[in-house]
Image (cartoon, rainbow, N blue to C red):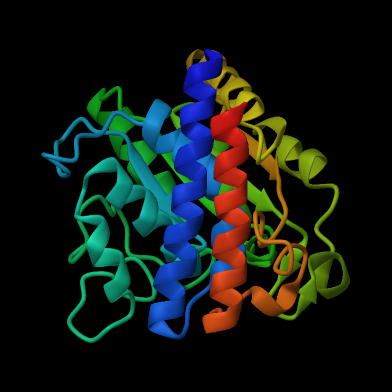
Length: 283
């Protein structure tokens, strides 16, 4: 990746963060914290990794993405809009009656959404089915899925991982947003799932650690996934992130799991992001 490519991705990440804040503010509800932590991963995924076409969102041989932590829909919608699947203006209709951008992704309503999600733990099972179907068809399609580190407390996640390894679904890439927080507090206090890497390895996955806010490390993680494709091993990327990343008063604060910013908070957050954009542009 060139420095210019990285700079453009960083600028896109700032825009997506602004979109998340504006859309949840307008809606008066939503989940900004876990959306902000997943920005770099999703920006890189849709800009550099996925074989998709916004003009033909249902093309048969496309790669698939499943947002298993479906409450983080604001980040998915923002990335899809900026990728050209629908107008960015639609983002301000988040959670409104009649909008195609509901609180959780709906594949029937939203261009670019491959799976309706929201019940935690279930999205990953759908992703496994997609990967198995692609393998049986002899398709080169790859399947990516993003889970939360609170979500992986669900037993269904581990059943899916074991199934993927048994069926040698090397075309499947699990990513876990390891931000250390969930709805009620720290994941380690609610149900400590560490050591995640050892557990995923034991379930048959090739495990990669990456700074989830560093585009270079995310690129390295996907390169490792490509190397694992011929082995038949599913890949698990542990993205070490900060909940609420990019907004100082939201960072590392579980209270922002499911709370929209008010007028004053939005203004303060957007000012921080504007400063971040200027810094990137001047570098």
